[in-house]
Image: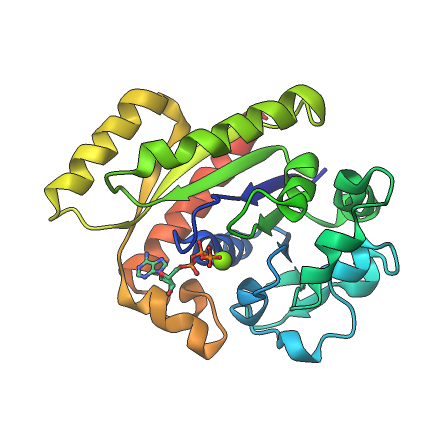
Length: 256
Ligand code: ATP
Ligand code: MG
């Protein structure tokens, strides 16, 4: 059975997409079968996996509206080693089109049942909002990975997300939990970042992943080549951190 994880944080630009595609590539490198789902109309995770969002016939939009199955809409990213259920601007419309439909928050969960045996991991890149799209991700997930920068307002920003996860857990998906907070774009030379990192560990204890993702320019350059950093420059510090994170995730799911 596949373990399903949302990469979510309603704050924009915190590293969700970078985390999703690099974790997907890292997991694939250590031998896991991975499906990466792009739930963001920006389509950055699709493009960042070497799949041209403008050329896709079928996307996660068709899956949410039940006009295609996951098996029909997924594509293989040969270079990256994992499958992609892509997204593009069309997905913006799903938000409104889903409103009158029954069990609208369960569409993705329902669709994923048919491919459950095909994967070890399903990773979902969420948009920077707590919208119907993110809700579809949260309803089918076993856990949420929360990338965050160790900045002054980091803890405050988490409150809304934590409350949403609690509500979804109580009402819609008993499996859901925060699997962990991932410190990203970390610069150990900045004292404030070290302080916030310590605060995080104080508050969330073992919910903070051991792996820390450093700020690394190769990770930022990789998307313009349509690749995750892990594939673009495997020897870079950023890529190595994501491989370590993939190994940590493989260990974490053993107890789940
Ligand atoms: P959005 O909320 O718009 O979906 P996001 O949370 O998905 O954004 P990303 O797109 O992953 O965030 O990252 C934002 C920017 O930071 C990008 O330009 C990305 O290349 C850069 N970035 C992410 N992680 C790192 C890192 N560890 N080191 C350097 N740059 C990074
Ligand atoms: Mg993103």
